[in-house]
Every structure is written in C-alpha cells, then in structure tokens.
Image (cartoon, rainbow, N blue to C red; front, side):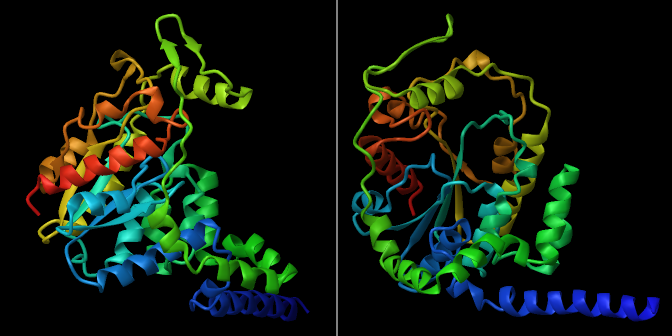
Amino acid sequence: MGKFLLLRMLCAVGGLFAVDGLVFRTGWYAGWMHPDSSTGHYERLIVHEREQAQAGGKRVLVLGDSRTGFLARIADERAAGRLRFGNAALGGTTPRCWYYLLRDMDPEANAYAAIVVPFGHYEDEEAVDDLRNRTGDLQFLAERLRLADAPAFVRSVSSLQAHVQAIRALAWKGFLYSRDVQDLLRSPSRRAQTIETYRNWAEWVYGYQGEARSLEGLEVDYARRKITFPPGLDERARADLMQALLWEPFQPKGWMYEYRKEWIGKIADRYRGTGTKLIFMRLPRGPVPRPAEWGRAKTSAAREIAGRVGAVMAPEAFFEELEQPRLFVDARHLNAAGMTRFSELIADLVLEQGL
C-alpha cells in the first residue's frame, strides 16, 4: 500500500512538472499573459528591441528603472539621424533584470553601438531594501530564466526566504503565473481585448511626453530637517517627500558593492572586447539633493568596473542642472520638461564619444 501511494505521489508531481513545462516553458503562455504585468512589459520590450535591431543603423540603448526619465524620441531628434536610441528604462527593474534583458535581447552582443547604464550614485550607497533579495525580479524574469540559470541566480540571493522563492519559481514557473492565470480564466475574452489595446504600445511609449506638474515652490532645510511644501500638495505626496529626502543616513553593510560588482560586472564583461561602448552616468539626484556629507559609502563598484573594462564614466555633475523642483514631479521622477532636457543631455553625452 505504501509503495502504491508513493508511486501515485511521484506520478502526480511528475504530471505537475510536465504541465508546467508544456504551458510555461514552451513560450505558449507568453502570448496570453497580461500585457500590463511586469512580465508582459519585459517581454514586449525584448521583442520590440529585437525588431528595431533589424532595421539597421547605429543603435544606442538606455537602461534604467522609472527614475531614468528617458524619451527616445527627443534623443533621436537631438542626434539628427546619426544615432537611433532605444528606451529600456522599465519601472521596477534592477541591474539583475538588465543583465538578463541584454542577454536575450542582444544574444550576439553586437546590436548596439553603445549602452548607457544609470547609477543613483557612483558610490555604493545603500537603501533599506537589499536588492539581492528583491524577489520582484522574478516577475520580470518569468519567461527568461532557464533551469541552467538556477545555480547562479539562487547564489545571488542571500536570505533564506529569497532562496526558497527563487528555487520554487525556477523549478515550477506556475508559481509566478498563478494570479495571471486566474485572471485569464475569469474572462479570456477580456484578456484578448486587453492584449489588442497594447498593439500600439511602442508608438505610445515613443510619443510619451511626461507629466506637466512640478514641485515648484519646494524648499528643504536639511540642517533643521524641515520641508516647505509646494501649495496644493496632498498628504500622501508630502509623506513621500519626507521619506525620500529626510531619511537618516546609515552605515553601508557592503551588499550594494557586492551586488553591483556581480550584475553590472556581468553586463560589462559581456560587452568587453566587443564594438559596444558602455557609458555609465549618475542620474539627477532629486529636486533638492541631499547634502554630500550625508553619504556614507566609501566603495565604488562603478568606478572599479569602468576602470577594468574601459567604460566611459560621465562626470558626476553632468545632470546637475536638472536638480531643481520645477523639473521634478515627485522626489524621484522628472516631469515633462525635466525628461526632455535629460534626454537631450543623454544624446549629447553619447555623441561626445564620437560614435
């Protein structure tokens, strides 16, 4: 009886893995996932950039998250036909996501004349959240992670909880798609309609102009830990500014240095010796930058990697003209005017390299 039960259990587990493989590891489900999901955005970006690479001409890719308020349309206009820019600044992504994005978007490491890599700081300043254990990365990487990636990916996390989630997701991708599948089954017709509305996603992104509102009137007294808010700002926006600008600095534990050394290092090594130039840049720090003496990090993985592979490092002050309230919509994101000027400056930075 015991052997029969064990056999049934093994058959059940084997059946689950077989279904998981057929549905989620063959690419079949990719055509049905919600286009507004993390995976959907990530996959659509890969497909779009592959198509653009086939169009020819010198291409430049700008990586980043939502803080990288880049408008490819503005950069293209600035470059006047000499270069074509691609926007891979996807909200919520991290350097770990960028590595896998480039691996599958540019498999031969020859699609771009240059790749622009953003940093919040060149020094390895740390936030509360340890990026090594950011399990949200798995949602972006659901279609991209292979079983062969498991050892390196699992080693890249440090907490027990993150280890468990990473192993579970890599072994059975259905865990990552469970909510999406439930939503699809509730109304397949609605999902089909939603997918259809995203057919012109690339055109929408290219034509996006940003938000007009600003933080005009914002003043910060860092010595007294006091903020004068712009008129009309709601409580939620005020709390966000307080949290983003006045948090107390703390001594780095070293995880950011190790994390950047691993994932930015992998990107750099992938393009080392190719015709692709890597350009590192420090993003605008905010509407009213925190005092320099509040920084505690003494290490700089960015500088070490740039020196090792010959990457270009933009001057730290390159975007300082943007660090003013009238060019920001909140504590982290540029508004329409800020995004426009930011994109022009990125084009100038790349053109300065003589590409």
